[in-house]
Image 1: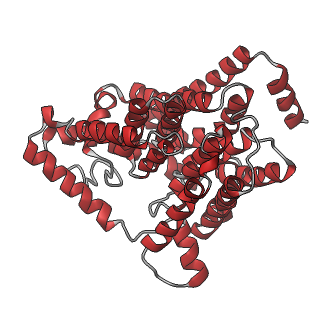
Image 2 (image 1 turned 180 degrees about the horizontal axis):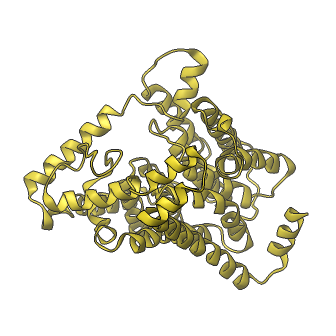
Image 3 (image 1 turned 30 degrees about the vertical axis):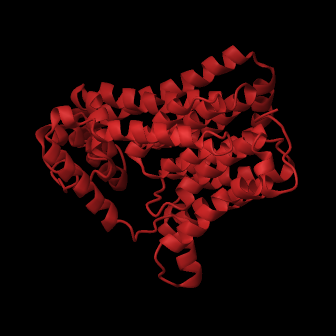
Length: 409
């Protein structure tokens, strides 16, 4: 009954009203998340809450009194950059993990580092949500895009709870695609390079330029914009210190190169028992990713084909990322959601997406029970549905014809 009412609302309500309602949901989610964390960090309120809950919940609430997660890591990294100290060292007195992004990201995050914590958290969550919202609208306009944003609400909310940057990264990748669909190479290059300042894998989005026959122009812009962003921190740090920061960043990334987390490489390891290096599986995945571009050049002018390739890249960026965490699957789920919302939504597609919706956002937010959150259960419920959809996307690009529908008529 609820699903029927939602479908009726999406199909009959005026588009401006739908858009305003969904935007309000996203902004309200950011506001409530920031407000809740601010209240939990207040000593008096925190103490009062711990007296009224179970011991397990009380320990979790006590931990909220001193925030030390991703958002705090980002804020302190900006201050460390200004101070000229190692961004990538461990600072256990300040936060629970190490900073693993570029020095440029630490600089660009500076506005959030120096404003009051509650306001900064709200604006950071809002930025992530709005970039993704605008990007989805540009790649998938109309009711299909709004359906996608409705389906993504739970997953984006979970990303807000962890103050992650994955919605921002997914949005930048989609904006790069949308820019190239409009033959705007420099905007696409800027979006890709900005995404790469956060995570390396968004560089895969440069391949969007191939079917648009803009590869050389986009590559040249990417090199130029990339060089500028690499050197961007120089006004506040010396060349020697900045070079050292990049060396320390490379050291952190090298030390993590053998991790497998919730990736296809971990699935292969569990299925075969072999402890192979990650690069052969990543190379095989990359060759599979670009195979439709190489083998189906006759479809480069088909908008649906290019849209499917966007969905494939978003899924690939997580499935073959050796550092794919639970939070990273927001990017993969965006790819799966775009594929579903932009398709004819045949029964088999609805079943595949429905399973992914249950196993990825639903089991992580609304379904209680530690059984679904063990490392083994998390790996299988995240990676297998995402892999199945990625293979379906690849098959659709490779088959005899691509049907034009909601994503590119």
